[in-house]
Length: 247
Image (spheres, rainbow, N blue to C red):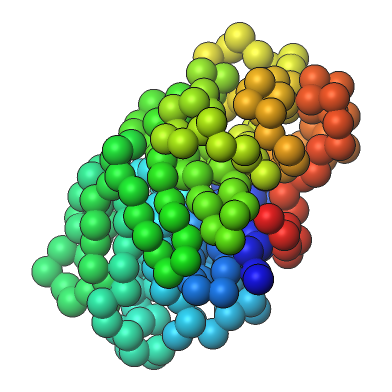
């Protein structure tokens, strides 16, 4: 049975020279889902799947580095790989921004607005959401499939609490956690976690495996990993483009 996440892009806030903005391909035997569609993620997405195979798109929040590839996918599905009725799930603010860009035009998508109380069944995947610590409504999903689970914090400051996700008493196998900066930048009002803060939140929730993501361009992944491991008490990985994590 397959349940895995491939990193299409993980760069924090803007793309680096070799890493697009946020995008994660979630695959199981029963569904293929794009989690966030940051600028530049369409290219690596096509290395992984045929676009006709995409079952749904889930967008965590309205900041452009997490969803602005959606209007590009619209063009693909309308004019090239012709599709209709592709499900998109996202916040009300993201829906409005998408409408503002494509107003009066055809769409291949069927939009469903979600909030922290939403629960989705996409093929054999169960999606639930927690509210992140971020300036706009930001939904961090927990996804369960074949008896395993992962959580994506989306963009979140240190106020993130895994207990905001319904069903958190169940084990979390993997956490993909915002770790945009290092400890030296804590306390400056940055709406993202440091690697240390990400590790502390994961440790409190007894997460079995921690993967750091959303590192700002120019960051040293080894420094983030080292800082997190000291707080987490175990091995930590970094979400680099092209890597696939078996859940």
